[in-house]
Length: 89
Image 1 (cartoon, rainbow, N blue to C red):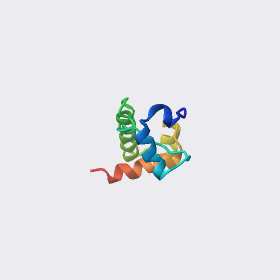
Image 2: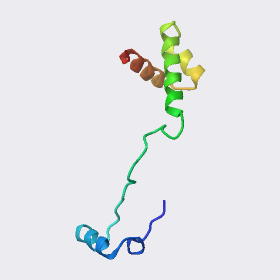
Image 3: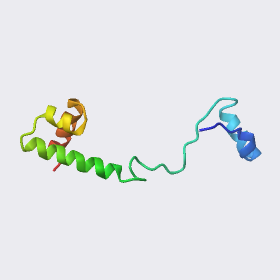
Image 4: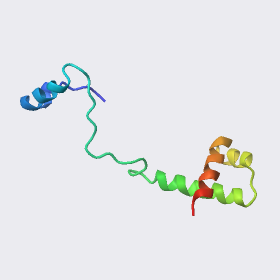
């Protein structure tokens, strides 16, 4: 992200109004609409599918260490996935 000079992009009256609140300070103006993680791709769905598989294998008797090695995750991550699986209906 590159900084832009407000005087180059904002109308003078808008710039004057902003300067009443903050003069010479850096401010961040967020995008109007921000998409949540995974909306542009199917990463969210793929991660949920993987987590469901992990939980099913755990319920079938797999150990957390085995699952961590199989999915290249830490045992702590596997434990968190199992906890979330238990909370789901």
